[in-house]
Length: 212
Image (tube, rainbow, N blue to C red; front, side, top):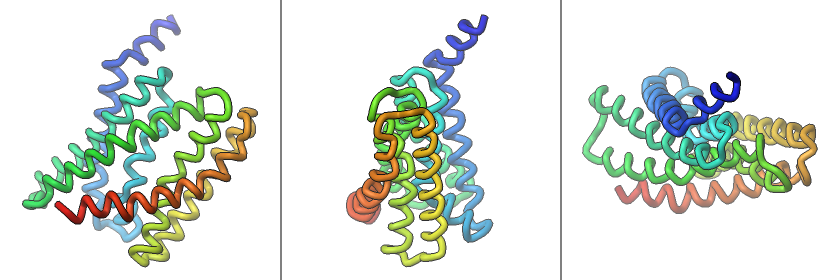
């Protein structure tokens, strides 16, 4: 009975339907929370707020290919949910279609990667688990750098930096407790990944958004 229940839960349709539904809800929620408080405004207008959820989804899905596909479907659905809510709120302007396309492409790139990272941290083997663990806080640390160095929002950058550091510490401790080989690589690589993410966001993503 338990095996049959697990099989139904891990069926491709079930996984993709669940991740799509959650993505739609996440997109709608981030739109409706805009402007409530300064911190929520920043948190809901954030790359990491979206794609970090796919790491959690990847950790919950038992089959690796399904985790990756689930990450992609979640991020595409998140974009659809956000911009559908924007259209219903009559704030979907003339340039929003190009922006939505850019964020969809970014989500389709980041979603599967973060879902893979979540799956690998929980279910993977070998030293790759520590590398995957570093990928997860990378987006938070990179966004902290973006907020501080580019936008000069130092207070918000400090919050993101503190959360990224805490997430790194928790993941490193989890991997150490699981006796993952070279678990310390998680803490060592996360800041390097954060810098790489910041450079990519400042260069590629910001350039694409500026061109639409």
